[in-house]
Amino acid sequence: MQLDPQVQTSSEDPYGVYRELRDRTPLARYPGRDLWVLSRYADVQAAIRDPATWSSARGTVPSGFVPAKPMLITQDPPRHTRLRKAVQRAFTPRRVAALEPRIRGFARELISDFPGDGPVDLFEAYTNPLPIFVISELLGVDRERRAMFTRAGDAIIHGQNDPDSARVQAAQEELFGYLASVVPERRARSGDDLMSVLLHASGEGEALDEEELLGFCGLLLLAGTETTTMSLTSSIALMDLRPDLREALRARAELWPRAVEEFLRFDSPVQGQTRSLLRDVEVHGEKLREGERVHLLYASANRDERVFPDPDRFDPEREPNNHLAFGFGIHFCLGASLARLELRVALQELLARAPNYAVDHAGARRVRSDTNRGFDRLPTQLEP
Ligand code: HEM
Image 1: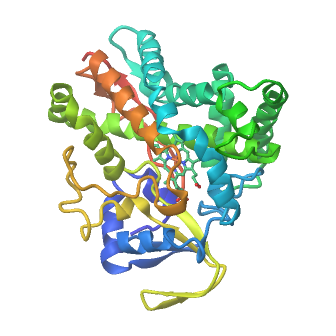
Image 2: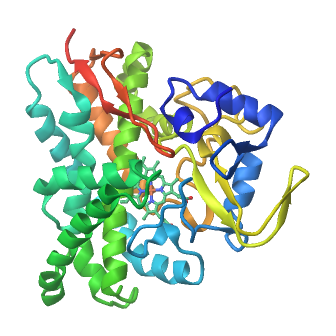
């Protein structure tokens, strides 16, 4: 068994390795990575619910990369508590629900540009642009910058293993430089876009300072887009192998909310996140020291037979489904309801346009990343 986060994340089926870890070495060591790994649901959940011991401040990815601007995801309390409260007001259920017609509009716009019956690379033509259009709309930034946002995400999220590389630094400068150039105009007028809202204090929350604002918008453009793209590509690839599932989803619209949760559990787009210890702890009889780093395998927790009956079966009606695909506790994904909405709408629209699509699995390409799982090339015949 070759044990490495990137190897597992990009392999065809990492779930056999995860099962072995859970059964034989629930606390394991990644050789050569200076990193422990926890794979059982109970252990992963216990860690993320205790941020006073399991810190996010030294990065949440195996390389220990910490972005150049302060981001919510790499803060511990009390700063995390204050920042989260300040941005929460921009993610009200009302604001998210109001986006549904816009998301559907974007999906249809992209679909109308598909070439006849294909072939088409669904990553390029659909799953990559859609989440970027949504976050750009939310932030009020120019969606035509998609190529730059994708480049930055690619360098920053997938280049984590070499965090000091010129490529990662240049990507950060380009992304934050663009965002900073938009701030003065937003400061001058108070619009309804998220940047304007966060720059101005209101009865519901305080304003962010400029560094915090840039970090937060950068986080949304990176983490809020790539994750959704990964999840869409994995779901499309999975449905390709399950015509019965496609048919069920088209015939019974009420299945969608549970099916979306099952897509997230079954092949989790964020396979794991890392924490650093703020004090010594004992786990499975082993003493872990303050400062040591532990990778928490959310995707393995989501297949843990101790929690999920028949975990390797995709069950679109699974209930309960308390997966950890969005994390848990104080860092629980801020965009979870938006992500669920995007997944449902994008997959619905795709099935309406191309119910019999066929993915060319030989031509598909998996992303190489320590944390995120999905495809960045998905050639597909729309009507075989
Ligand atoms: C399927 C899509 C998505 C998945 C699987 C996902 C997953 C996650 C996970 C696992 C975390 C917790 C990280 C940790 O424990 O260290 C997280 C945090 C976060 N996510 Fe998402 N995410 C998705 C989409 C989005 C979207 C669309 C947005 C924004 C609109 C977003 C914004 C955030 C933010 C801001 C945080 C940090 C929250 C905090 O630290 O308090 N995510 N996400």
